[in-house]
Structures are given as structure tokens and as C-alpha cells.
Length: 421
Image (cartoon, rainbow, N blue to C red; front, side, top):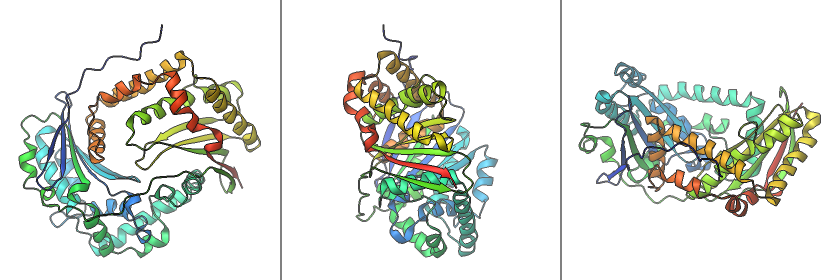
């Protein structure tokens, strides 16, 4: 008998979707038992949107947003949100950027006004710009000072070639030093547009009437964007290299593969199942073989990075330098065996439980729910939150072997050996 796929999940309501007159998307999901409301503003303005001279500008802008607007002094937003009992954060990725606030329900309307003013009407003061540039440059220096980070960036650079996914989100130092407030304002005007933004709200929403409030907000004043060149699809370059890095404490085998992009959410779930089957927990194939049985590695991880232009599967195995050839050989052997022989039902059931339970846990938190529905709406995906669990159950051992496992053939990877100098 197949193992149970996991505990049942009480169905969540369908998100309520609405468009302001200018085309901005609003998506709301009622979570009456949640203790807080999450306000999450998403924009298609990640580092992949940057021109060559704009390297690092998307992330730099995320920093500068918190330096205030015409109505808010630097730091005033955080103080006001904290006084309301909430907290805020932001993150810039390759594809998008988002700004979110977790706030008690009764304070959500005021927090929403503050958030939209801050993000959509940033002041970009010249003095603050110069000071924050130093903060960003220091962040870059810290990244460049960590040999593990340098190794991963080198893996992405060689695997992704000239694609934006091979460039650092933090940017190039020479570009950061040349940026101006005027260039940043132009980037903001070009990308923070009505058809490129989405507001997601999750939590106890009864009585908030946010749609009426938004019609008088800066969000309703956004204009549609001018035609922009689309980010090209990723074509990962197989190959191999070896680098020596000072202060690297142990050797690393790094590998990268490409899977279909985030638009194919069903395949994303298949990729999640495969990486879990291979490297999640002591009973997973790579961990059991390389760490538990042969003791070749200190650790081995395999992560799925969901990206719009092509998802990336990234492997990191940490070991002694003299073990690198054996580690690579064993990784190759495990993958080829999986390609040759479909996974057994028991290990597929185990992977389904782990993936399904992780997803179910994320549905219990307003911030996670707002992020999921906001990101999906931003990129034109409007499935119900239960749909991924249905996709999960649709993956059989045979289908996984036919559609996803062959994509992780060792010869289709870029392989980088990083060793201490």
C-alpha cells in the first residue's frame, strides 16, 4: 500500500482579485485566524531588468526606498510601523522585488498608506544616496570576502553565461560607484508602473475596505509602462572548471542544471520532488550514499531555485580536497542510477510527504500566503492555493523518470570544483 501523502489541509478561500482602473492588480485572501495582516507590494523590477550600466541599481533602489519620501524622513517609516505594532522588510531577486509589512489588523489601513507612499514616491535625496551607496558597497565587499559566496557566483557566471542570472544581484563595484540619483529615479519610473505592480494582502481583512482606500492612493496614480524588451530565456551552458580560493576552509563540488521556468508550475513541483528525493534527509539518495555510507562529504545540498526565465538546480558538496574526484564520481553514479531505474514508490511517497507538509506549513502564516499569491498574481498565475498539492499528487514515478529526472543528467550540468588556495 502506498504511504499516505500527508495530512489533509482545510481548503483556503480563493483569493479575491481586483484591478484598479489603471491596471494595478490587487489580490486579497481572508485568513480570519491569523494574528496579523501582511501587506506585500510586488514589482517586476529585479536585477534581470537592469541595463548594462544599471548593474546593482534594483537592489540599491530597495535600500534607498527606506531613506524616505516627500512625506517621510529617513527612518520615519520604520518608527511609525513599529509604533503601530508591526515590522517591515524587503527583498530584491533576479526577477522581482517586494516590500512587505506585518501589522495588527486595526492598523493595516494606516500601514498601507505608509508603505505605498514610501515605495512609490521615494525621495532619493543626494546626501542619503551617497551614504547608502557606501552601505551597498560594504555589503558587496562582505560578499566578495566570503570564498563560499565567490564560488557560487563563479558557478552562476559560467553556467548562465551572459544571461542576467549569471550576474550578481548586488551589482558590479564600478557600476555602483557611478550610479546617480537621477539614474535611479529613471529606473524607478520605468519599472514601478501600473502593469508591473501587484499588491497582495493576507490575514483577517473583515471591515478593512482596502479597495476603496487604494483608489485614492499613489498606487492608483501609476501609469502603464512603455514597451520593454523581455528578459530572454536562460540557456545553461554545460561545462566544468576548477578554481582556487584563499581562506576556503574545505573543498566544494558545485553543480548547476536548468529546469523549465516558473510559468510551468506543475514542472516546478516535479523539480521540488526530485531535489527532495535526492538530498532531503538522511534517507535521500545523495545524503545516504555520500555522507552516511561512504563518509565522503561533510554536507551535501541540492536546491531548486524557482526563476521566471528558467529554474536552476544547484548542488553543493563540502569535502576534503583529496576527496573531490570520488565525490564527483559518486554524484554522477547516483544520478545515472536514478536515470536508469525509476524511483521506488516508497521513496517517492516520502518525498511527497516532505514537499507537501512543507507547503502546508507555509499556508499557516499570513506572510507566506501573501508572498505566494502576490508573486503568482504578479506573473499572471491565478491558481488556487490548493492546486500545488494536486500537482504534487499527479507526479508518478514513471512520469518523474520521463519528464524531470533526465534533466539532471551529469553531462547537462556545469560543474565547478572550488579548492583552498
